[in-house]
Amino acid sequence: MPPLEHVLVISAILFSIGVYGVLTRRNAVNILMSVELMLNAVSINMVAFAIYGRVAFDNTFTGIIFAFFIVVVAAAEVALALGIVVRLFRNRATANVDEVNLLKW
Image 1: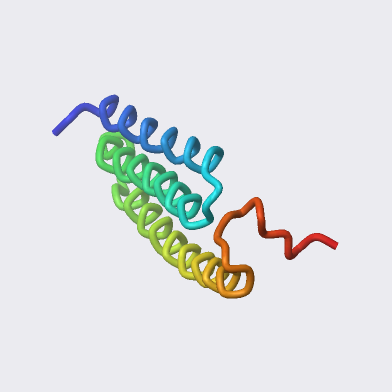
Image 2: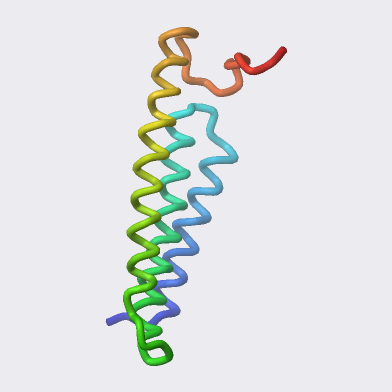
């Protein structure tokens, strides 16, 4: 089993890649994939702390339960956001977030 520091570094790298993708991409689908990458990095952190923190706590399933809820919320977020993106693409013929201004007055 790798040390906790290695798992945290990998998770931080994944989260940083996700933040970079959200800040630099203009396509809505790419932004959604970057958000999912960030949520997966957080999920990896939760599972790592649950596995490596079992010495300090009696209940080892709290991190795994949190990770499960993160996966459920991520799936719901993708389903809703992908539906919105598909609808915008049908109306505007683009998935570029800079060209979509439906919420402006």
